[in-house]
Length: 118
Image: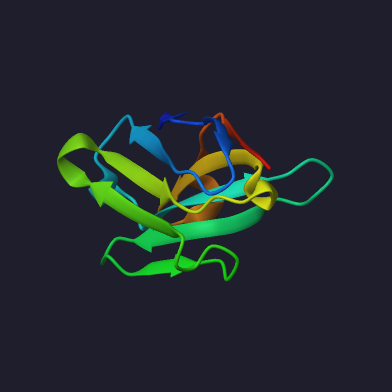
């Protein structure tokens, strides 16, 4: 069973930065895509950023220009660098990885809390 372990969350002031890490229990080359999602209290989970096996990235409009997703293949780790954080970025951030067929190969981490104070 694939395991994804997130780290790096915490409390930061508005305008600050955090870097989230997602360490996979196997080679990230095996996944078609990996990404970060977030869920704030009372809201639905939303996509933050994804990176596909070919390296292309995709970002939510709300984080474009502030967040960067990257991966270290040698460490089987995906990162989310978050700069210029805003209070509305406060949420539980979860790592996701999937490979085809997605309906049986869709994996999630336990989540890490990010809190941005104003």
